[in-house]
Length: 112
Image (cartoon, rainbow, N blue to C red; front, side):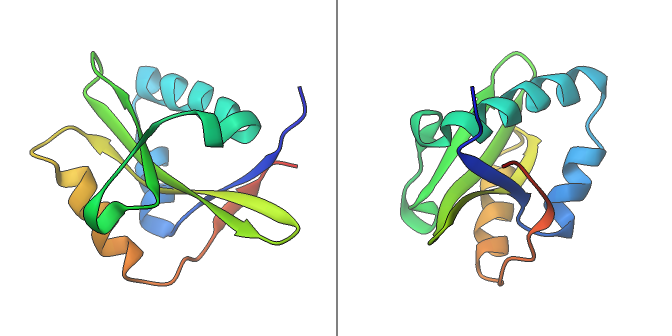
């Protein structure tokens, strides 16, 4: 199956969160990233309020959350990975909200 979406970390912090995942967490997120490259628009749960337009993926047993959004850049649709973190009193969602107030850096572009 070909990739429809280009993946990018929103900024250095989200790229660092991915780099700091332990082995199992990195495998779980890695599988999700492959799926996002193919069908990001069909995955995840839509978020509301200050994260409207974003979606979340969660791994209950691992206690892990990832916030992403799809950005249409006319010729290429980009999936921005905004935040990845443990489910710790909604911290990952607060981080995502703060990051969205800043312009994206698009770190580590990959995909089609």
